[in-house]
Image (cartoon, rainbow, N blue to C red; front, side, top):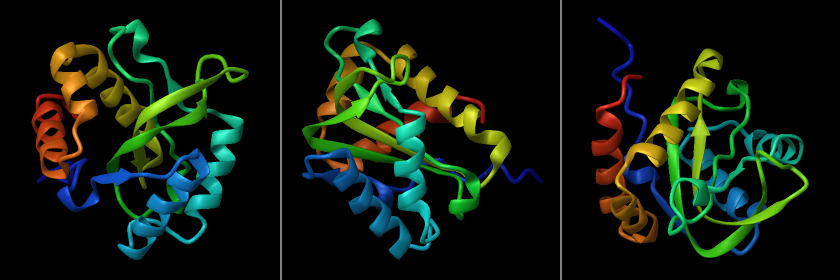
Length: 166
């Protein structure tokens, strides 16, 4: 029996944040994840440190001009306890550095925080998120990024990623 049955998303780990800086959002979500036992105490510092060296802001305008920018903050597996993607809808645009051009800043409206305790699988999850952003219908994706309904966000992601091979 394969161990790959672990779901990438959990309904109780979908968040809506009203924080206004990347650090505040990451701190808020890190605290919740730590309280749930999903990450280790050093998670926040390591995500912030990695974000400074390897920014994760992604410009989705190249996919469709109507889509918001996203960020995919993460850190090494030694700081997490599970394999999961944490979706975070941002009520206010938050500034992240651009993954492609780290000298450029961008306004981001949605986060996919990667928790991955399998060091071999980090790029796999990142590829799945990028595949989701580039192959999902732009109108559906636009509505998804605007949604503040945690259950709807979870169900849309669960449905969309079910077709992808882990």
